[in-house]
Every structure is written in structure tokens, then in C-alpha cells.
Image (cartoon, rainbow, N blue to C red; front, side):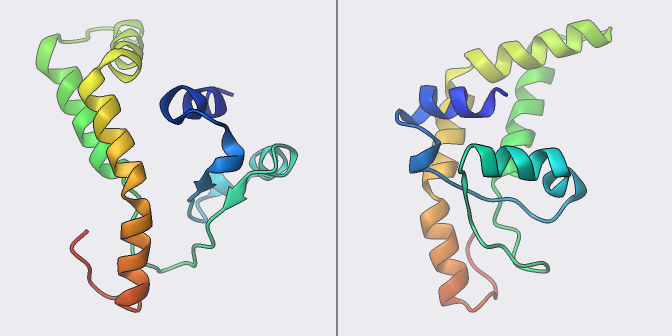
Length: 122
């Protein structure tokens, strides 16, 4: 798994210092995922169904796609994967944007709680 080493690289410390957010999508509730979360003693944010979508991943995916499409056109699957990995692991602006979005999660969640699940600026 690359998640935990990436967290250490970006934020220092380890998974014990992080609260993970996920919805109830099948890929998040698979038996292997549940076992991994339990084995690594990961802390999960209680996130009920039909709640506000506060996950910053959509913003991050858009930025990643824009950066991938900006410089070169990938014509093969291998080129696409190589480009994706290159941007994800080496683009400093993407890394800082992702880091900022994750750090803002406390504010995002507090805003949803304050709005009782209603509209927020996020």
C-alpha cells in the first residue's frame, strides 16, 4: 500500500495522526479494505450516507487531469500511467494544493456541522 508512506512523506508522523474520510462506496467497504483499516488501526470519520460531499478529491482529480493534459498527450496506456505517476509524485503545486485541501478538512467538517448538513461555502 502506498497510502501510509505518502501520508508520512507529506505530513510527517503516521496514520495515527490522521482521520480518514470515506463514503460507503463498494471499493471502501470491501472486506480487504475493512481488514486493512482494522490491521493498521486507522481512525475513520463517521460519514453518514446522503451527507454533504465534502471530500476534496474531486478538486484534486481535476487539477491532476488538467496538469496531465497540459504538457503532453499520452497515446498509450503505459504513457498515461507514467505521466500520471510523474505528475502525482513530482508536481509541487499539486502536492501543495492537495496538502492544503486536506488541512482544510477540519474547517469543512465544522462548517457542515454548523450548517446542520446544509449548504456551506465549500
